[in-house]
Length: 501
Image (tube, rainbow, N blue to C red; front, top):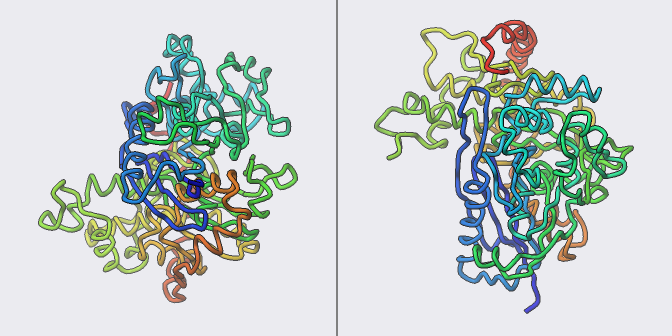
């Protein structure tokens, strides 16, 4: 039998998603398994790589393969993407030595300042190198035993193939130690930080086949031994591909755990191997415009903590939390602008427009008339305001806007975003990062010949949300206030009690 399908696996912050797709874009199987993030201390964010990344990934693969009509022998290749950059130390047997430290963790601010001073390059708190230096101080035994430093998808690819690798995009955001021009690690930069460059795996193109599924991995998952696995990449580029934002002028808004705004500046096919996010002159094809650390996580936090107050205990699920559709219906009854209530969404700090790891969430304008539903709607609107900070500067270059990831399934949230941005927004329910990395696997294996296929064939006829002119005028006034609050509270944030070294 000639292999004619691909498998895509997305290791997300709040869950693992998988798809099996034919070369012409027909989705034959879908599976998802939710999980959570551990916060053992304020500003810390960790996950168990063995249980959450590999274990949940195995469960999702098994569920995909159990779908009627799915034959592992038909899978031509496998792509994996995931949350990044993360710091997962693994031993010589490929097992994690400790919980992985996630991109949203802010524990290593002292080491971050030192790394920036030593390397002379701007870094944010998401970088791996300061956290690696933090571990060298606080858990030196784990660093001493480490064999590799991997991110989430690199770890899963390693478990599938036995081969350690790191794609160019992930390497470029480890933190000042990757030379994108040479596509090689910078040993001198590592040495300057006191880090062992030998722990960093060989850099590879995202579409490179790094190996085949091992016998052990085949027994664990049900995959066919030897099935090719590409290096994959962080979840952003597959999410862009997976919503069809492949043409210059396509802006993607990801309503994921982290919220993102990107602009495609060159045909993505020209940068399929990566790095994808370098400047155009250096071969890249995607520009960053906004990064909102708490997007889907913001709503998940609110639902768990306060959701019953919105809908009433009688309407909550058996778990005690209402579903997001019910929360949306309550928020839709609140006027645009939440009757003067404004939220800042910085639960885990701010990345854009100006990085500030001290920034925190804020509600401004509360009155006795505001209800829990007002608060929820204000959170939805806060993401729109944060995205607009990055959208206005690129507006002249934007040809179309595509919404994707979990929160984009909400018609209310898409309408709020369209009104705040004053821009039509496209959405395809089938779009996902898992679909995007499956497409990269199909492209690498020759099942598809052009990136146009995902826009024109895999994702035809998207839904369209048009802005409402009356609502937009209300949001224009509140957006100016949002920006004033966001810029003026930096000094106050810095006065909050520190939880860092």
